Amino acid sequence: MTATQAPPIAQAPRIAIIGAGIAGLTTALCLARIGLSPVLFERAETLDEVGAGLQLSPNALSVMAELGLLPALRRVAVEAGHVELRDLRSGRRIAAVPVRSGDGTPYFSIHRADLQAVLLAAVRDEPSITLRLGAELAGLEAVGGMVALSLRGEDRPQHFALAIGADGVRSAMAGYLQLSPPQAAGTTAWRSTISVDETGNMATAAALSGNDGTDGGPGAVVGAWLGTRHHAVAYPIRAGRAVNLVLVTKDSESGDPASVTSLFESRDRRLSALIGAAPTPTGWPLLATPADRPFVHAGGRIVLVGDAAHAMEPYAAQGAAMAIEDAAVLARALGDVGGAAIEAGRIEAAARRYEAERRPRIAQVRKRVSFHRFVYHLPPPLAFGRDAVLKLRPSDALRADLAWLYDWRAPKLGPPPAG
Image: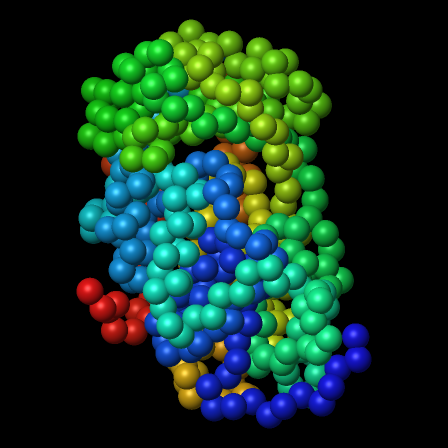
């Protein structure tokens, strides 16, 4: 691409966001809250319903609360009370880990499309955000203190003071920056969404959707069944009208869907009933970006957020949460150096501050992911020791183990949203 001479940066800098998924939509909303007017580019012509379920822990929901979106999310999500760990083969309960926050911030299980719909509605209601669909990135270049973005089908590049890559694990932005590609994790997640009325056993769904008498307290159950080489996770979504089921296997064991489900024979009636009722699962090979991938490039003019910056395996259920946190931290950093009146020379300072704050947090979450991957798949007799230790720990201690993760709170971004 031959870039034209870049125009000078105006007092209110032009900011581009590439990708209108969870990371991009949340980033746009957070930037709008500090007085900026981002342009959000998405290559898809329409934002259709895609994906499966995900979990939003209190740290992520504190950002949603800051944006005024908790009421809308509550209408389509299910509030979880605890994560229940069980042995895959026997169905024996190992532990119930509380996930509620002491300050009242909830823990939601939700369909990805429902979360995206809430974010998209908020973006469309925000006049300072420009959303462009069918806009595919075709190149980028840092020039004259700006970033020139080329879009497929357009003759001339557009210039921005800051370009934010929020385009996922297979990020086009990362590709144009010639970063090392994401690596296969060696595992595959097989996902199904089960309508409650398809289970043929309403009690099975109810056991996940409300208090089933465990010591985890009232609220929905996020069920996790731990095996030697694979594990299963299930939780209610769509306001309790469906259940998200995920079967995680090593790639060496992943064949056709029928052979995969045969690996999950269990004496737990809930898991067996859900697998029996599930539509044919779709396999998603898990990818992770290199841990040393920089988040900031081109002298602070290009910033990566979410999976484009730090995709990781889902063992701590924090992929979406980390993207949401990124959005708030980046916006706060930009706001602190001037917000809508930011000077050109201070954008890099804000970008560097964002990376400095996020990198230790992401590294800590990655360590937790590795820890969960290890302990989830312990073989006997090590698994017996794991189970014994967990059984001896009171629920308050189990919750305290994750306080560093769940008790993170969003920075203040501006006045409360209208209404």
